[in-house]
Length: 387
Ligand SMILES: Nc1ncnc2c1ncn2[C@@H]1O[C@H](COP(=O)(O)OP(=O)(O)OP(=O)(O)O)[C@@H](O)[C@H]1O
Ligand SMILES: [Mg+2]
Image (tube, rainbow, N blue to C red; front, top):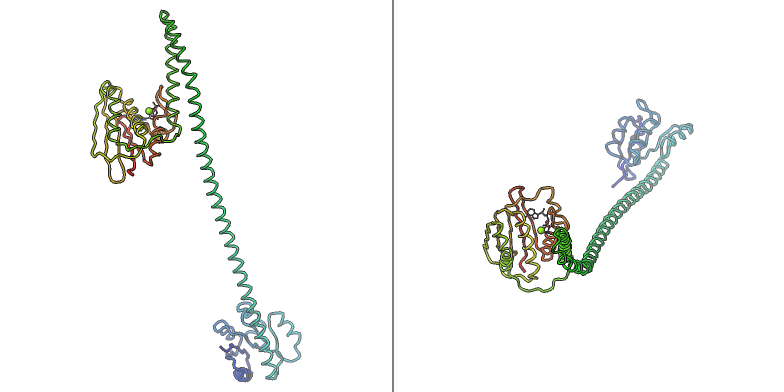
């Protein structure tokens, strides 16, 4: 593509002459008779260079030069000036002209100077492009750096979180281990206390008051022992024996063991086995523990009668068991704590029951949920996966 050159001069003859010379050199030539028109053409055609006359009516060459250089920096300007105006030429160069040509000029000189300016222009524009490319690359690097930092930070946070979880897990495991060990150790001396308490008590048969103190001691010892038993159950231990266990049979066994209490409390039992699920590979004692604890809690709520609901069903993925009571329900504010070990609202409770239930259910990758309405009752739902 030939480069576009604009010639701005109020003298027609100059326009014609330069047009002719430049066209013969292969340039595309545009002309304007005054600076205003010239600026319009610059804006529209973006010529590579402008040959601009200094002395012009309406808008003088200097003003036009300044505007072109400011508004269209890619268009280079060569000024025409009259002979003997070197001072002006200096001023023009300062104002951004690339060169100046003294009028009258010779053709050879005009072409050479123009070619020179165009060559410089090409180099400078190329440099500018390179600079811009460099800027862009630097910017891109900067962005990548930021992204990298962000990712490193993200990964660090994830690692920290994982680390904290591991620590928490280890702490819990250590705690379980410790409490199991302690529970064992404490139960032995407790046995002695109980034994000697009983001996003391038998020697105090005729002193009723003292005998009742001995009873109190024995009762408290029993309570401590009970807590320790629960603690032992709560702390993690390997499953002892996996066998094929029928949940329906386990439920029947549990209900049988509470038979007397159910009758005594005048509780109505509503047992619905919709389906009898296939046996699951598990530890029978643990499965029994789940329902024992749930039924025990339910019965506790119905000291003066009520309805105990036991439902069993299954689909191809899981076994569903629901245990419901018509007791006092669980106050909303307690809901988030009932599975915590030690959380109890009972004067003689240990608060282990549900935490053990939760641990066992989780061991078998099951789920437990509940609905409770204060004053109406509670239903616990347990899901145990099949296979
Ligand atoms: N069916 C229920 N109805 C109403 N409240 C319940 C029911 N089951 C559990 N809770 C509430 O949850 C608490 C925690 O139950 P969890 O079985 O863990 O311990 P606990 O029964 O208090 O003591 P433990 O089971 O050692 O005798 C109970 O104290 C009680 O407030
Ligand atoms: Mg309980």
